[in-house]
Length: 418
Image 1 (cartoon, one colour):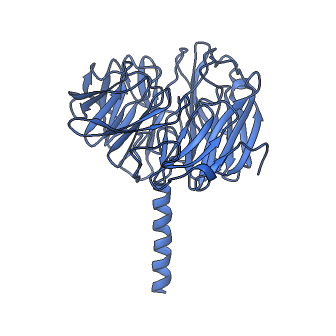
Image 2 (cartoon, rainbow, N blue to C red):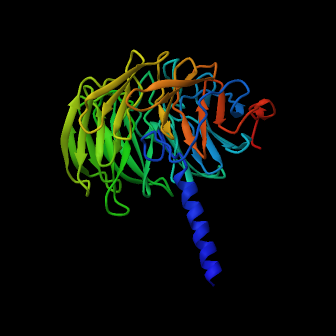
């Protein structure tokens, strides 16, 4: 009996560790961009540390997510980009596990730089939820079977713009939350993860907005709130009902999303506005504002008592997370669209031209390594299982410290389901 109990405990422990190492939504399971466990290489190239490289046929700016052995991305294809794809690859081998395709039901017009597959999918560890710029939201199980579909573009035909929507969904408990805001219509809504049925819907500003919601965990087990950032304020809502718990008026960025760490929310608003949230998530108080912590498109990242931003000039700015005081700056190479990640005390940033830069953090951050993708990279990396997954304009890559030669692992896109 003792052996059975010990074995059961070990299995549950290993399962929880695996789940903790997943990357379940935009910028990771906690939306902070920091990996739980990883030792990434500081250099990579054509043959070094590329575990596999998969050619992707469609267009997309969405970042990969990782659930166990599933690396999931979305794509759009066709002259009007109205063919929507969700694909799952094996994290171990890069083999295509399944692909599902849908017709877009809403507006698919967007800027040539972006794509209808711009929002990053999300997962609750058992299902995948993919949102597209067209307003189509689909729920799938991990075998790729369709569970439900909501044509939000038909339900809200004015919720769209000619640039393209890119706000990514988040999961809070048993609710999947989306935020769709444009000049024509603006709303946020929560849906049951199992059925796609509506839980709530609230009006939002009728202004273009590309930021993504984030989830805050409360001190009590199972409690959380979802933060919605718009140009005039950031607000917290009950995931089950949509009820507003608090709001803070500020001139918020409409591209760069907020992040949170240790009960503090760092809002891109005229620099960075730090807000302390109380333990039951019901109140907020301002801590500091630092106009010198400025942004381009990349979202802020907090680690080790420091906050980091990347400005439009491609400069990494390091600030004290408790005061906002600027501590150091580092000139990077190129311009950045995707957000950085941190793993094992190292920050990885990939510029738009596909040059990865590895930065050693500390009092004086410094670039200690580089890696090339040789293609445009607009998506943020994902880190899980000791590896980094990067989506470039034509490929999906796995970078790992123990990978030496990719020649036998390079794959072509599949013409159909495996």
